[in-house]
Length: 201
Image (cartoon, rainbow, N blue to C red; front, side, top):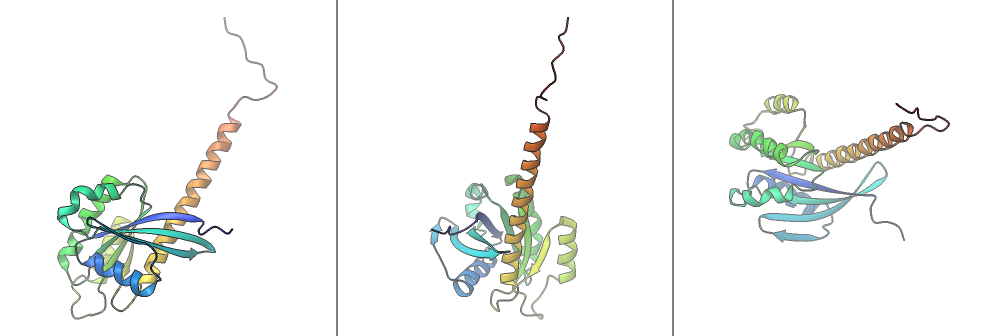
């Protein structure tokens, strides 16, 4: 029996309330076949399998909804997270200003995690407040990738999810290679056959 997937990753979507819900639900409900769907207090949990570079990756996508009254429990959902999608609304300057706070929260709760910045509702130039060049400058400073998306028009959403999944997959492979190299070094530094230990005193 063939395996359902080669890798299992947990992604967390965070951002101010409303923006996150529109992005994740539209994407999963209308662009993909929805698998398991569980609603918990303040968090929507969804499952989706993608194929990245010939490998099947099963994603557990957690949507925290960004509601302040749930902030006391959100730290629990950072556990075991491989990638975090930080979402702001390009028509809402305050949501972009809060991105720095969300990034700080990620640092406080995650040791090693891939991050990506997403400016959603990028489908009406007249309503756009957060300019692309300003967002890109900030993303460069934070050393994270920026995607401007529209869940409503399905612009750049699939590309964004594929990219964060690819980043996490690459990180896992690099970590595995480092671990193997470390094991090989340990073996080489072990006891060398044929040499006798000198006695002291």
